[in-house]
Length: 386
Image 1: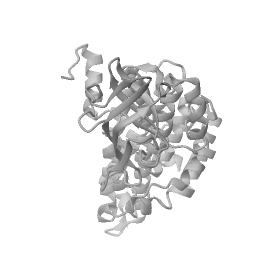
Image 2: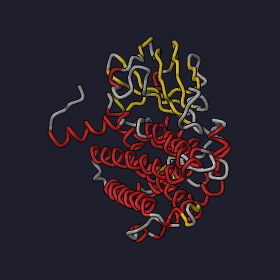
Image 3: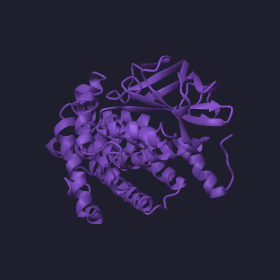
C-alpha cells in the first residue's frame, strides 16, 4: 500500500518503532473500523464498543505521561491520528477530544487530586471526557463567552450554554470553561451533577459517526476544588486546542490518503472505452496531484512533529499545518470522488464521506479564516481579527 502514494520514501524518515505503532493502528482500523464505518455513518451511530479496544492500543491520552497514559511521542500520536482518520474523521475526533482536549486539560492544568481521579480511568476508556469551550454565539471568539461561574460561599455556581461539544452526552466528566470575576477559568464537572444537560445535535451531514452536543448549565453547583488550579485566562484552553490542532495536521492527511487509494484502485479496475480509467491522461493528472499533496502534507506533519518532540514547535506553525493540510485534504477527497463518478456518491466508497467529514474538521479548532489571520499577523505584525 505504501508505495502507491509514497513517492519520496517517506517511510525511511520513521523509526522502526514508529512504523510498528503506525502498523498496529492501521491493522485495528482495517479490521474494526473500515468494515463497519458505512453503517455507522448512515445510522449516525458512534460505536462506544470500540473505546476499550482503543484504550488497549494505548491511544487515549497517548502523548501524555503518567497516570496510565502511554507517554508516546508527538510523531507517534500523529501517525496514530492519520491511521484513525483513514478510517473516519469522527473516530479520530474521539481520540482527540478524549486525549488532546479533556485529558490534556487535566494533565496540564489540573490538581494532583483531579489528575489521579480522572486520568487513569480515561486512559483505560472507563471514563469519557468532553471539553466545553464553544458557545452558540462564541465560536471563533471564545473570549466573548457568556457562561459565567459565580462564587456562592465556598462553592461555584455555573450558568450558561455550550455548543458543538464532542461526546458530551456520553461523557462522565466535562471540562467547562467559564467567565468569572477573575477571568476565564476551567472547571472539572462530573456530568451527573444536577444542572448539567447534554443534547446531541442532529441531523448532521458531516461527522455522522460522531457525537456533538449542546450543553445547558443551569445553577450547576461545584465545590471550590472543582476549578482547574493552573489555568487562568484563555491561554488555558488554547494550549489544549493546539494539542488537538496538531493531531488534525496528521489526521486530515490520513483521510486524504484513504480517498486517493480508493480512487486509484477504482480507476485501475473500471473500464471505460475499452481500457481502465487509470490509463487516461486526465485521470493520471488527478492521481498525481493527489499523491503530490499527500506526500507534501505528511512531510509537513512530520517536520512539525519533530519540532514538537524537541520542544520547539510554535503556535503559528500549528496554524500552517492545520490550514494547509485540511485545505489540501478536502480537495483531494473531492477529486477522488470525481474519479469514482456517480458511484462515488454512495457509502460503498469512502471519498465523499471523508470530504463531508472534513467540512467539520476544517471548521473546528480554528476555521481556515482564523488560521489565515494568525499567519497574517505573524507575517505582517498587524492583527486583523476585528
